[in-house]
Image 1 (cartoon, rainbow, N blue to C red):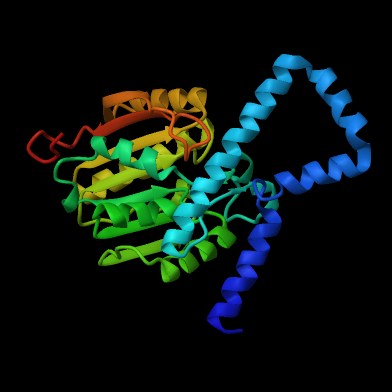
Image 2 (image 1 turned 180 degrees about the vertical axis):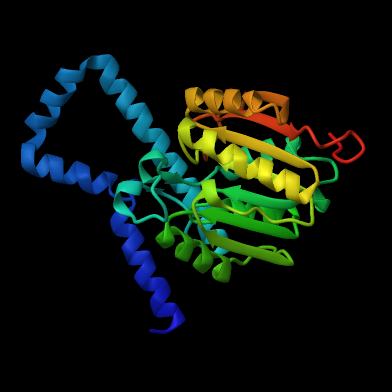
Length: 284
């Protein structure tokens, strides 16, 4: 099977698993099975407020999806949609603790970039739970020359690799997609690290991921900035508490992004520096 046929095969496989792509199909199937009367009955069941909330939510998803696909077309890649982990295999035993793969909004990434170190060009950028690889490409566009994606779903790793081959934007000197469970990952050494985490996993995995960060700090002895964000505020807050409780990181900033049209919701974020990072090593 040639490269283009492999790409087409992956595209078809993803289309079948993409929850956002199947929304319209599910609506058609519902109407076919229950008819308009069934739809009206469902609306009465949830009430006016629930119906309005549903319509607004679906509108957000559709706008987010359209803008994501526009970005994809611009760079010749496929990073949009939502892949639920129930529909894919993963490396390791932590499938139940991972969240669906949804790519970071480019505009939200641009907003969060204000929290990157002033000397960010010295850093290796690592995306934990990279999914289809959009953030890897956004980091490359931003100007990082060493970029790495960590993902425990082999299918998503293959898609991210495919996207890197197709990507028409700026290419860094070094980039790679690593298929590994984040709790066992060996982070790259030799340079300061910027670790980016967008809705990757539940709090119990954060408890087991912190040792991987600590291990990297002890071996690398370089500054580390940790950027965590996501559309699940309670999970992000709980993860921040775990990070602070480790006593290996200090908080630099936290907040909520504006609501960008290419994101399905605002992102809660927390920014940390490793305690090994002195003011001389990592600039605000």
